Length: 165
Length: 264
Image (cartoon, rainbow over all chains, first blue to last red; front, side, top):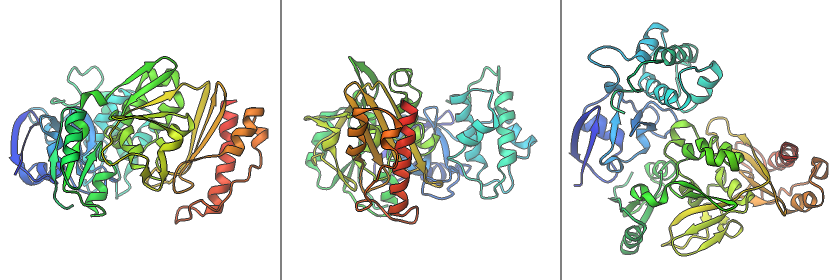
């Protein structure tokens, strides 16, 4: 079987995979990084969002082998030294989750949003930019508030959107 | 998904060699349509040849009075490109409305047009601007490229390398989007070129098409009044759970009028 090597959350990893192995399967089943979720498996819901070379993408629709040599950041790589990332902290403070299943994808997508749109995000922008992520609890109100607050809290923060991007 | 052998060539020559040697090989671009269809087992290939490692297919450059976009350029890059926004903002806006931000980070222009999805956005821009599809072996005019439902003029061993868009005087893309998928129920691209007007419609039928009645009227006088009440034939339009052919015909007519107003 072919071997894939990549950097995940700052660590060099490699493993034997099939041609058809998806990035999300490699992360969850080979590396046991189960924070990245599989919600729909049809690239609608965004629960599987990770950063590939700094950009948010749906890992259920990317082949593991296509990421050979890439740098991946998952939700497990966002906190630094056990301290929540400002975006995670904002989700905590604003209660930006109900069941929590979509939350890892929401946070990874939110960080990509900050990369593309900056720290001052109005509600309309957040809602529009969040169209690749679904919350089955429909708890969007607090998610939107959390992203606005998290983006603002990241302002002036010298660290990039995520430490490993 | 059935298994396949994965390849990642570093240049177009190696990619061509691979698809020439392998039985049922398929080219992989961003994979935003191909991988979901493989997961549903709608297709099966012995080999996937990923074009993602070929640097020469990526990028945007100005070439005289045209814009050349590499086949593997992601939608998000086109949408954010200062070069595209300053020359053909309608194309940047079209790219910015495809799927969602995460899909736009990975999906590519070459993959979109090679797939020729009846509801995809790019075909409207390509035909609406009268672009030229550049492949490893020839140049194909947009009007000759899209043949029908998921069908193009591409030969089995032909790779799109770039698309060349003439810069219009002004253009606009309007989309009535399907609320869940963001695909076009009807998408209308109207371009005011130096020598007339072009009107292309996606989503409404099995493949993108031009509305030549509207183009002829607009060539005489570029004003919304000349396309008011324009009748669109329903015979070749799609009817599905999203909209009937009658509704699509009506929307197409109304949207052409609005698009003309927007670029007048």
